[in-house]
Image (cartoon, rainbow, N blue to C red):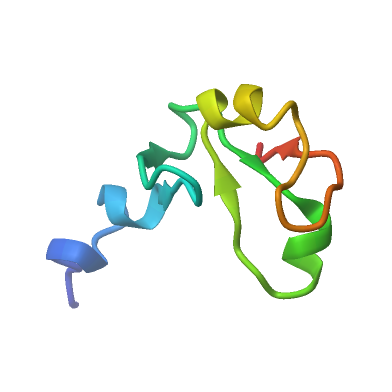
Length: 72
């Protein structure tokens, strides 16, 4: 039986960490509020925004102009 250690362990925060596209802040899924653009995700771009940048961008994606939605 093998046990997962280090970054491969299921409880490691590396699995649930995203970076804000604008400011680069680390965001933890389930702890922080994370917004994403559904149109950009459909095109294969992974863009995530923190709550502060969501307010600064007035809820709109800076790349395509569509409305941002919460990740979870």
